[in-house]
Image (tube, rainbow, N blue to C red):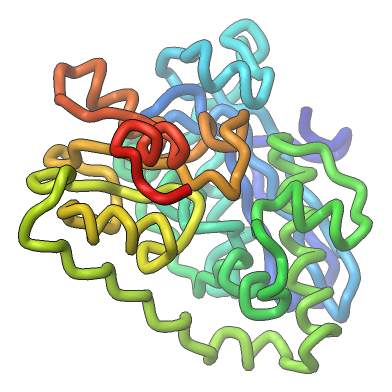
Length: 292
């Protein structure tokens, strides 16, 4: 799935002028973030695309049905494809020493994990999270998932295809620059908004002793406030001590929830025998007969 004139294990020459920024997106074969099975990279200069690079990757790992259901890539699709170690030089050539955009830090973490597993050096680059940019450029949107942004901005987009996702994330950056008037270096220098503080748990209540992670709204949002008032301790992420993952009602309990890292982590913990429950807000309120 590389471009006809591109060899996956050889750095691909871009335009003579270096790109202003590059965008990377990866798909993974299973819950291990090192299991990259597809990677897409797109370079942008002066508001236009100047190169693209895409290849399937043999992750040397299992393909879980869950992940295959998201991106459609199977073990048979990567037969004969290079492993990450074989394309590391190409990836490093595109990303090294540049501004690299990724839609959330998942791709950054996946590349770092793949480097460790394949015993390749870490790629030195300056990272920019397009989710953060989108949240500050269009705070009115209820979600800043890439497919939602692509629809809002009128972009052609095939979700969970690495090259299409990389291209769409790059366009998010360009449109945000147009929308706000803030240039690329301005976005690099702009700090993330202060993370909201979780509400303090009540000393008693029906959720006393529960450690609750909230999915679908900020951890100081209405659901978190209500759960804390019922005695729950609100935690920032799903971990081994989390006892409940609560999904906010304002977001439909659908595919996007099941594809989210907190949901997947909760499933993994539950399968490992941890006592973690996954509930919707409406289920939880009904159970505790809380306010509608």
